[in-house]
Amino acid sequence: MKIIQYVDVAATRFDNDKAKGVAGRVVIGKNDGAHNFCMRVFEVSAGGHTPKHAHDWEHEIFVHAGAGEVYSKGQWSPVKAGSVTFIPGNEEHQIKNAGKEPLVFACLIPSTAPEL
Image (cartoon, rainbow, N blue to C red; front, side, top):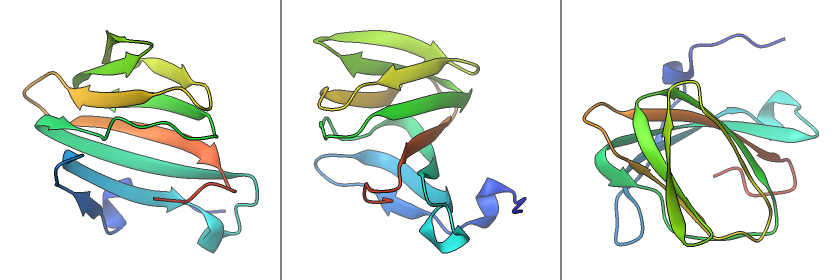
């Protein structure tokens, strides 16, 4: 069993031409013996966004805090704390912070995908 505070995991920061103000943490992954899934927690700062991208695997996302928008199929949809989002594989997507506080979300991916 593993019980942690996600903020105790060192963050990998992304701030470039594709992603702005993003901190990602692998909170459960291969190093924990997780054979099926990887759980990551992302914090997106105000005005920040993940890269617009697509890949073979699906995402299951739970928004923990803040307010944002998710891009899919040519449109933006609002999300807030408590929202759950499913993004199928090969669907172009992006997440941006639409508020003044950090947007915090947990994201599950299959263990066969890159952890970050």
